[in-house]
Length: 326
Image (tube, rainbow, N blue to C red):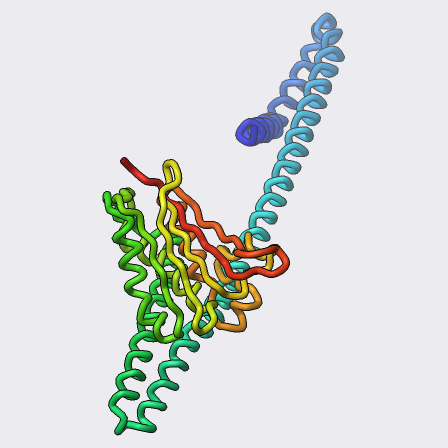
């Protein structure tokens, strides 16, 4: 449609230009006809008719050119407004990206500050009583545990950033999900000991085969376990259970923490989102967002629910489901 209007406008203006260029020739021809008409009266009778036809043709051309000019102007105005809307939308997108960047740095700095502060405190306690080798060893264990926790958070942030720009590559292969879950639990035991929370692991006796990326499945399960440890009270327990559900393999991590307000449950997997308890205990809300992405890339999903009653939650259970294979 746009091409047709442009072509018609160009043709109209071309004809008009040709008509103006030929005006002198047309005037000369009419003068010649007038001269002949004085000699031949029969020719003079045809001059008014010819003049009328020329005027009608000129009016039609003028109307056609005006119509094409009007159509071209309206088309130009429409395209201008469309471009203006696109620029406004792009400006809004850039503003959103800038806001996300600011939020990311704010959350990341808060997330990294928590384990760094804990490590500094442990080191200061150990240095205050350096002669007690037992206390020094315990402090170093806490430092290592928090350093591992810090490393996992950094991996989550880098991984989530890569999922946003499409650079993350999943190396899919057939593997036993039992081993993945077991490794994730083993990696989190040092941090669990540091916060004085017990981890109970329940695995099926038969292999549970899935087609997926071992590294990112491990990170997603580990993120959920460490999140449960962070919200569990000292002396509490975190349960990790793997079971088969039809065509899915489900990993459920349950804690004995305060639970999540029911209205906030659908939001816990959003990047940067934090419930009130999360804001008080630190965290960027990145771990669960990364977990959901990994689960979806493996043909499943991530869900969260409260344990206990609606009024008095007794903990939270996060389930990661991935597609299983024969």
